[in-house]
Length: 226
Image 1 (tube, rainbow, N blue to C red):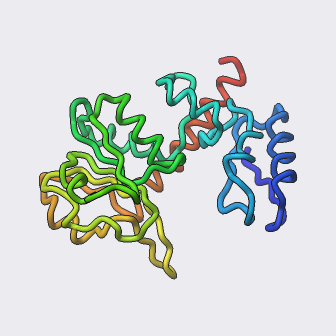
Image 2 (image 1 turned 135 degrees about the vertical axis):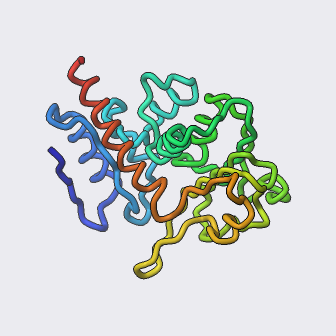
């Protein structure tokens, strides 16, 4: 059963923490997702620590981050979008071991975790962020390019190489239209038929939803001792 615990739009951190603590202690709750955006002034990383790590199906707690950092994927509940990117690559049989991967963005929600997952899969990984010098030189060297910068249309055709696999993890709603961090038309024209592009909308978004359901099922089995 799914249910939603709603708080006022101006809820303060202590109220959010109290709600997450109560849900964590409830034996009928097997998975918890902390929705964004949060009220102004509330630190997501701080309040997320009130979620029991074994019910943290969106991988938001430091406990699950530590498991990921240690390579303990058997016990970690992963940040769902990062896990979704890896599932997309696996489903499309994209080889990772020994390949050059570049991640654009270093957030603890997507960029950082997916870089670690790619490393654990054997890829050679470089992270590009707002302070990186000559980022296009780096992204053009990528065989696998994951873009999670939160900037609409940041990556264009002049930033990719022919044959690259490009995964767009950005999402920007403008009216009824949704755009990603990748300018799909210009990138597709460069990567060509030997490359691949995971689009927005589609691609990472639906897979993230599937990963959340999968991790909720994992959490339920673990809490039941199965």
